[in-house]
Length: 246
Image 1: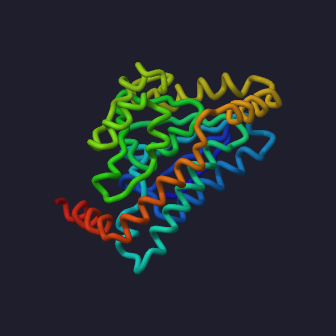
Image 2: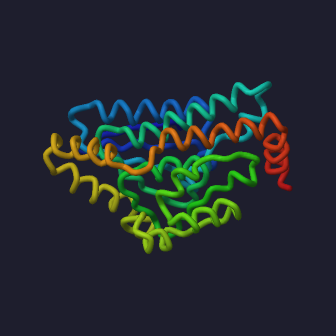
């Protein structure tokens, strides 16, 4: 259990494994950021695959940890941890291929929205349920997956969208049966890894440099409203209702 890494040739495979639903505690977000950053700094790594074990790719932050914490330490930690992990995907010196299965929610959208390539299993669904949890965030990254008005609709309603629908929007590269997901991700990763790593690393930096969306600043802006909602008490009420199944 934890953030696991293994090497497959020039491909670094980073696996998230926090059963039962991959809702990550504060420390895990920072550990994930460190794993991605270190992989990018390794000259022997030409591409990274980000995947998960268990029922789904990612269920966001560990709400139970936040509710157990006195004051705002866990909330601030989760905010900073997510910011670090999302940024580490975007800033990784080599391309990041996200292999998504099952549910990809909240913080999961922050990870895949900043990835370079998304491969998904046919059971994968994507969503940002933040408004139902009394929080805001990852609209920045959802907007990288779908057009603006659809993003707003999904955000306000907390509805999910399927991998097949994202394939039609061009944000998911391939949709495959669940059993074929890891091999499909490795297939595209190995294709990238065959290229001259000097060129690929330069290409990653260049593509980030011409990006029209300043993902770091816009996500940090969103997080300010999450903290404001916590000060108002709205977030705590929403988290309690979620945990109590209401």
